[in-house]
Length: 66
Image (cartoon, rainbow, N blue to C red; front, side):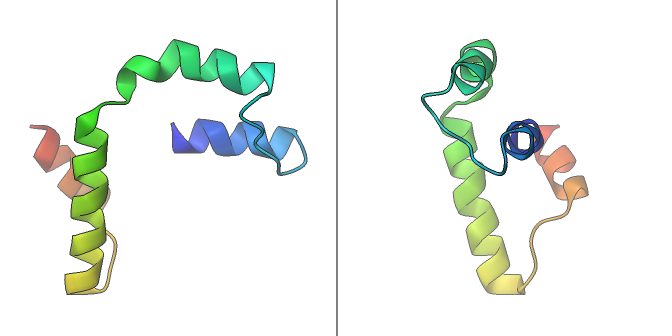
């Protein structure tokens, strides 16, 4: 989702306005992908980076998903 939102921002001169219809449509279509698990993963990623000095790799995300 982050990559998709970044592409929307690039298409609008680097601005991502929450009020814009494009962003609202995107969030309506993809809102079900956002849950409490996202918050927990984000917190875990922050702690991982604090402890190890690097962001978690995609392989770690795939391992967690399994």
